[in-house]
Length: 168
Image 1: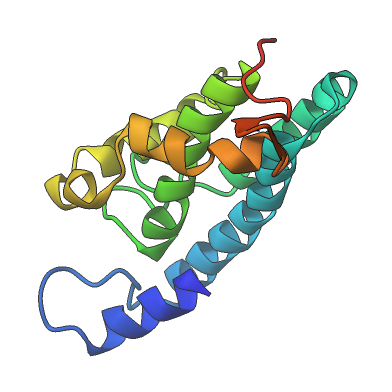
Image 2: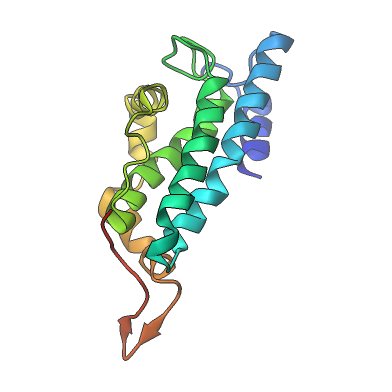
């Protein structure tokens, strides 16, 4: 629902550039980009929560397939999803990309942006915006918040008992 709230705030807000383009064709492209990215998110969380290392390669293949479909609908030049101007698609995807870049590397030894230059460029462009960095969690904060999740919600004897960090 975050993209719905962001679209509403963009419509009623008065400051700054609009995140939803005026051109209906660009709006349709933006919504397609968001739809494709929404398919990436659940598989990344499933991988983060995965307790079976034998399933990692299959999960990574699904992530790469879904991320590839997202990248395929991005503007070829960028750096943002629709080209040179930031849009709601960037605001929607960048926080998740940043989070998964941190979490999947730390907890699963997997670099989600390896070989995904276009997605990496989108994230870099958004990370260059001061307001994004002012509101983003630090890597340590992100890792701490998701520690229980990456351990399959298992605690025994006062310590995490799930898979925790692993390497590829």
